[in-house]
Image 1 (cartoon, rainbow, N blue to C red):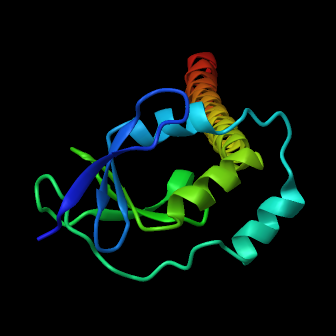
Image 2: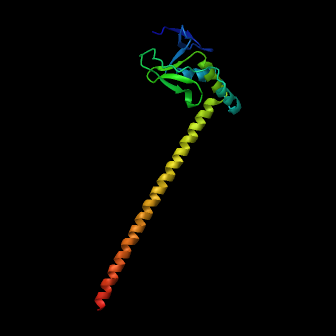
Image 3: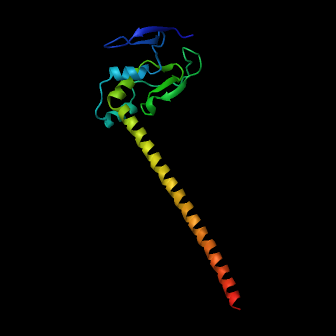
Length: 174
């Protein structure tokens, strides 16, 4: 059984999260982590690719493969890379929130400050645009194939009709 204490980690205002007294992990209710990052990390207007790469190569926190139970519902939580790119594997209960091991919050804040979130969202948007363009190309090919197939089949039937008409036309002259 996990014993959690409620603590205030806010800088400018109260921000209450739950902390494990044994391992110092933190549990954020749904959307609290995003709100904390918005409030605590200064806006990054550029992406420092060099420092982001270095942070991913030499993380501040080493992940230990461990499946955790949600402190609210006791179901096994899903392990997810924060925003798919941060290198921090969080434990997620989609109903209740996110568990961060000791040190992971600091790494997520550092990654966010270096423009990691901006970079991840940009890459996700680029991927969506690539997928949309590929879908449009596929539909255009299908439409073109269907048009040519219909066009060719019409020509085929037109040719047969012309041949039959010619035969009947010759038969009338005899």
